[in-house]
Amino acid sequence: MTDSTDQIQMRELVFFNSSGSSLQPRVVNLDLIEQGSTLSECRLTFQVTSDLYQQIDTESFFNLKQELRGSLNVLEFHSEADIEIEATLQPQLLSQLTEYVTDSESAIAYLISCSQKNFVPKHAKKRSKSDVPDQNINPLLLTESWFALKVKQNLESGEIGYRTFWSYLNPVNLTPEAISNGQFSDAMEQFLKDRNEANFAKAEQVLSEVLEKISKDLKNWDETELLKQTETAIADFFSEVTHVFENWVEPNQPISKTKAHSKGEIYQAMLNFFSEEDWEFTKLQGKPVLRLAFKGNHGEWNCFALANEEYQRFLFYSICPLEIPSTNINAIAEFLTRANSGMEIGNFELDFDSGEIRFKTSLDVTGAHEAGMKYSHITPALIKSLVYTNVLTIDHYLPGIQAVLEGMPPVDAIQMAEQPNLA
Image (cartoon, rainbow, N blue to C red):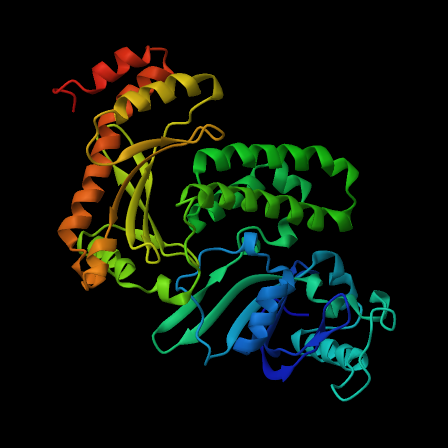
């Protein structure tokens, strides 16, 4: 065996899902990675057509669960180019390779040989679940035995794609030691930061609960269960964090999921504005939303800019960086209500369940559209006014929010916050 990368001539390999249905990607490369003289990882890279990727995407083959995917650096893949997937074999199955292979070439030959034994051509009688029990298919060929690390597409303009959680914490390294020494939590936190779709105060709380649950359950899981049980736990975690984000972005008027809305003039106008202003931003996967950061005189926090093409609105949110305990909710609610009173532009919002505070400014251009004006009439000056009014307002009130958390009565805190000389 070798720990170097051996280029494999592109050949088709047949994978099977748990029901026995097959899919045929083209092998690009296979790496056998050793630590000392022991095989520690088998990493396979293969290509699929756009149509086949849609099937993989829809059915979460190769453990490509939506919750475990990082941010896509474009809105969608192109239909005319193949898509490349890099995946790693479930560690518990490595022993089945070492018994039959000595290097990368013999490994891919062995996998292809196994797949040919299980594969039924399209013209042959279709297998049913009863005809093909799981034990008849070599587990090395099951899509659920492989964990996608990276999905990409190479275009003339450059590479696009996304990483999955497993590229931050390889299944090979998913051990009780990784959980106890912080490697597991570090990977989750970094993945979440890169994904840029979360209320981080809420994420931290849920993360602690997930780690506590996994740590308690470790003694009841055997080696084969650890990976699947952990995958379920972290998928639930990321699902909850994403749910938190989606709940506050126009909860009563959902974002349209059509492609046209993701590429409308409002979205392009805000892209142009933040680029011209030299604001660093990240595009959120599948949504006409940008994540940004701002540092004021009294703190640093995350912001979200949203283009709602369907309802012809531009919205900008600042997320308060202070965590609000449930014991302070009522006092904070009073403070924010007093702050909102008489406020001409924007308003504070409070999530009573999570304790999250956000400040929202928005622009509705429905009238302009009805008058025959194009979205491009949303000028940089209009966006600038909403954005900077937003961040300066929340920065102005942060000391008052902090004062309430420290025990100051809301009526006194609002008077302090609204003093003309407060910077």
